[in-house]
Image (cartoon, rainbow, N blue to C red; front, side, top):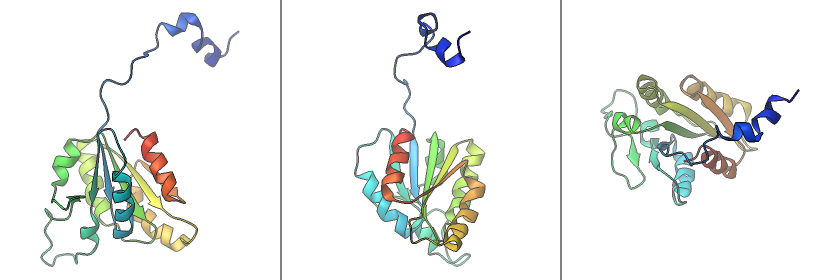
Length: 169
C-alpha cells in the first residue's frame, strides 16, 4: 500500500495538479510600528516586491493619548503621505506588523482591530536580536499577541526579509 505522499506523486494524481502560477497576487501591507523598525522597513522597501506596500505607524508611538492626537495622521507611506488605515486594510490580503523588542507598539491594537473587522490576516514580526532581554520581548509580545494570527521573533533583519519573501510579498 502506497503512503499518501507517494500516491500524490503518481501519474494518475498529476492530472489534478494546478501547474499555473497563482493568478491573483496577494496584496501585502507591511507596517513598521516603531522608529527602530521603521529603518528596517524602509530598507526592505528598496527591494523589488510583488504587490507589497510599506508604511510606518511610528508617529502613533510618540503621541500622548487624548492630547490633540489625530486618528487620521498616524499611518503614512514611506514618502510621508498620510494614509487611511481602513482604506489600506480594505485593499489587503495580509497585514504584516514589524516591531522591535522593547518598543511601544500601541498602534498594533488599532491595526489588528481593523484587520479583524475586515477579516484580513495579520502577522507580527518582532526583531529581537541577541541584546533583547526577556522583559523587552515580553513587553512587545503582550501588545502584538492579541492582534497577530502568526507571531515570529526574529534574531536578525535577514530573517524578516526571508519571512516576507516566504509570505510572497
